[in-house]
Amino acid sequence: MESHIRPTSARHLTGDTYVVPSLTNSGFIDGLVIDTCEDEAAFLDVPVDRLAITHGHADHFAIGHVLRAAGARVFAARDDASMVENPDINIRGMFSWANPGDFLVTKLFQGVPCRVDDYIENWDDPRASAIALPGHTMGHYGFLSRDGVLFTGDALYLRPLWERHPLPYSIDPGMVVSSLEKIREVDCTWIVPGHGAPTPRDQAEADIDHHIAQIREIEELLLDRLKIEQTTEGAIALTSAARGLTENPAAYWLAVATVKGFLGELLNRGDIEFFVRDHAGWWRTVR
Ligand SMILES: [Zn+2]
Image (tube, rainbow, N blue to C red; front, side, top):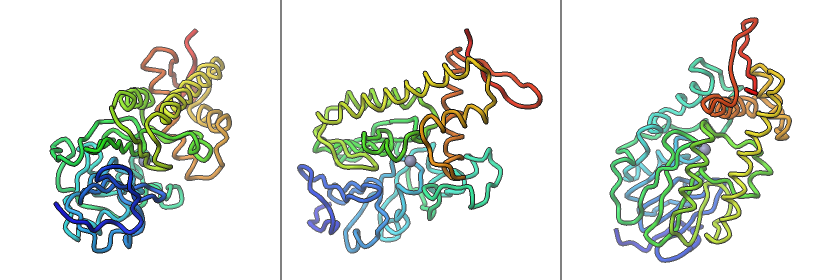
């Protein structure tokens, strides 16, 4: 698609690749959009033929339905497409499929549904290639533009973001580390995270190292503190306190998923064990 109309706030990175900086960054490559910002005015009268959604969290497709209504074909991964089409699925999943009601739910998971036209697994587009980066969600993808800009969604948290998110949401920390190592191998000149500033690739090396180090630190914390057995609730509380989370229902329920992700990982490695006592679930480091 040849057009020189671009989002008003687009910042040029290199070649045909632009970023629309926002709470959630949006990529723009010659009519291809990668994730969306919240402000539909940014894309007013901008021809968009394709929208790629890195993962099924509502803050990454806030105006997806608007772009689709204007003619864009929407792509999401098979594993995350249902969360894009029905954000309630993510909310239900967080609460073991029961209905938590609005009070408990992070704003980041609440959004307007967006129909998905095709799966990223069928991706074939010269403007960018899709790279599977699971761990934050099952079907998380990054996109590498033909100009060498890697859009990493929420697979990589840059150092400044850790101050606000000391326990970033993830469902599988082992997968997060593998995906970070995959990001490290990608030949690119820029990294654009879902949240935070576009970063030259050479500077991002320290961010990749930092993210992996934080995951190892949380694992070590659990292995150390579970030398004295803890309930699931106790493990969530001690991790949240050690990481300095703010205390509110939305933050708590996000931490539940993330800490369970760590517990599952350590259990599968044989580093901790699980048992039921007094009708509560307990975890203990294997000596
Ligand atoms: Zn996310």
